[in-house]
Image 1 (cartoon, helix red, strand yellow):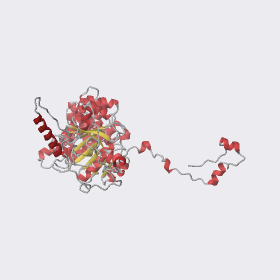
Image 2 (image 1 turned 180 degrees about the vertical axis):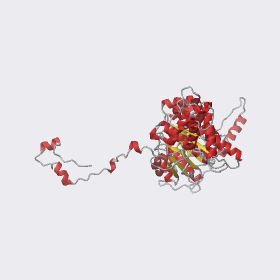
Image 3 (image 1 turned 135 degrees about the vertical axis):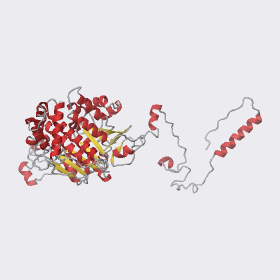
Length: 534
């Protein structure tokens, strides 16, 4: 429809040419003008008030034929960029369980580390491991539980090698999982030197080498954590290797910490013929393992396992909450033993089973150089075993508990955590925000955003893209009651709407006198006046 016609008048135009031009313009305007149609043809209802405009001018009826005058909108280019129609993110996709709502795309946010790893587009990731970082009461534990629980329907198993707070026990029981309780009068026992299932497709020589390396790394980690120096000498390394070799040969390939301790004692006392240097070096590892045999950790890890790993259970939780009250060193030793036992039974790349390995207080797995090296190797090989390690930290400063300042252990710990590509960053405080910028090299805008996040919200880094997710927006009442961890702190809050007074009128009369016309002063001052209980 032509709304206006621009006329360009030649400088030298005759009268005939001007009349022809004006006639052409009238014809164009008449041709562009729509033909008049009856009300029936326009399918408009008959107006209640006769007339050209009907009641539309006064009541806003849509049969008002008056032409609307919409004023133009003026704005700067910076503000107009906000209404550009393609600024909304396309999201991560719709594969995997729903974790929350993508606040930038206004759509459900699905996440599966295995689907992201298999994605070859720019939205894909190069690792299946996830770093979860956030302050206390930021909602990180509840979100991890949401991810693990909803992933069960997709065939993924959740494994918690060490539940130091007992928070995962009720979750495992609710979904029909398996709970292995250690300490507190329980008879369950785990052998961190278990052989585990044979890897599919591996030769006898390859399998023996892998099992021996894992057992040696576990022993070295336990001994180094106990020794004050924190480092083993070459002679102590040789003693542990010799004791492990003799224990393996004497137990039909099923060594235990008790048998390794006995072999170290035989070396230290001269029952096993070795040179004087090895005999002297056996004392440190011998006394380090003694606490597992006859010390505060006896009855838990020194003999053969009395429980088995249930590969068909949707969730397997090792409850170590009774042991963590004995001190940090006991907690670290316990976590190394339980993690080594779990890794022995799930590290089969041809098992065709995907698992989440959830590491609460992830810094406890990095207590020594040997543990760090084993941890780093485990993270690198996790995608080959179909495993997604979820490392949970309160802040990057938690890693300052690893080694001394500027030590190799601490530098390696920061390197291991920094190399985890997928990250869930929850609300953080001012000190934690500085570590995010310095240690993880996050953009300043994202660090500022992390300080303002509400409970259950996080900035999710998957591959090369970042997402702002509200996980609690999709939580059900069942999930909220199951995953909350503040009961011990908050307790049961009183609900004022449910408070009732079980007091009769006669009982109230015995407390407050009934006002009479004679008690003017009392009525004026409110003394002796009966009050209504709301």
